[in-house]
Length: 634
Image 1 (cartoon, helix red, strand yellow):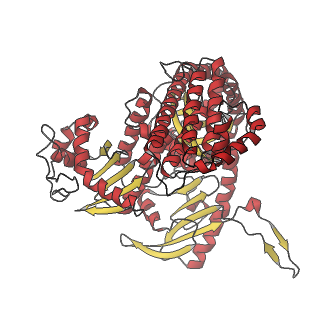
Image 2 (spheres, rainbow, N blue to C red):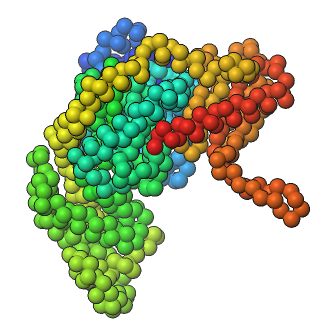
Image 3 (cartoon, rainbow, N blue to C red):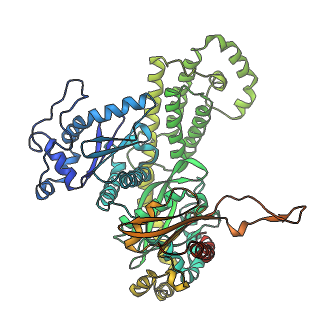
């Protein structure tokens, strides 16, 4: 079965190609000269091709595998691939401009799925497999792009050294996902954390002390992302702690999907040295703009590591710059108000001015060589843009000047580098959505946007250099001093890397140990994202029949000639149950949102009442484990 992935930029150019042997063979058959057969026919308009997926020859596996994958990074090859897929991309873009974008389309025997990403990028999945399987692949691929590039996806094809590591790891991740289709449910979830909980509880005081020392050594985190420490064994999260400056649990401040993405990242990129650092974009539950985070990894024992997650150097400026980029896009495409942009630019420039007292730049830079000059430059360009916007509505200029004078005291007290007229006009200036921006104004906005993007790229490059040359060695020295021989012997006695213990873990939570009849189950904590599954390999695919969301169901279904009875039930958090008697002596429970979702699979011949009773009994047992895990992931 053929499966392939294409990443298309805002100019409709293919910038990334990933796929299996069949897809590489398909591409080889359409490319020019040394790489392919003859050109496929097309019209000058670029909206027609006479070749479909069915009509193209299917090269042998050996032939396709001999063609080097590195050819897909060659600009001429990417240009040819772009030419071939341009009709499909054009059809999607046309439908998108009419606000009726396609989710999928058929081309011969293949299904093509689409997902619109930030910065006008488009992700295409091409497959001959089941569409639901392909959508799982599309979702995880999109998450991988978000994890490595965040709001700066437009820089993917910029050919900058700051993105070398991100592109390398992203390519490896996508290649791994492609090779594991159909993607199966995680058979372990947080089962290892629950199984090793008695041992890891003894390590929490040590990890707490270690986290405090490392946090103090590399600097207090003031950018909104708590300094977290994770204990990881064989790619499984066993427990986590935060520095004393923020006691918020990791599952309360990080997005659950990003926690799972971080777990997949650590699994796909095992630690090959004693220390390692890289940067990822992690989302907070309190903000739409992700954090640029340092992921520092330290080997403790074989297959056991400590991972520190903290905001990268200059993360606050990076996030403000990313938010300004989004706001400038809205100003161009939606003609939005300028108030928020003015406020954010003030904060960004103030942050740049604050960097003068320290050496922020460790790599050759332009904007960070003189931060005060950069701040003045940004303010000046924005000042001119605001004046240009003001000139679009000359009839409101007089009232705007009056309002600016009334606000002069507060503006001066804020020590803004903007003129009072520009600041005042920005508070009420609004370009109507039905009015197109003049060419000059749009050019000025795009010019400022390019400068902000370059500034953010320099900040990311500086953060990477700081992490490698300063933060990682400092943290490593603290870890080496703190983990004495006595500590290492104590950790070794916990047998976190014992093969026998991990074999025992595979049977942990097996229903028969509680004299229950279910064949498989999965318990999900909707608040923290913690999952406790028991999924034998032959039954993992059967969980696709359960509906998405906390819908309640109980039904018999057949898979591969075998009948099963599935139960899906939602439960409230027992620790927060609130009830009171009403005037009639009845108990009136306070309405609560579901906190847990339990999916259970029984043999098809089980009695319905017995299945429901055992489902409830299993939920009570698993809820106790999840409450304990919530405390372990503090």
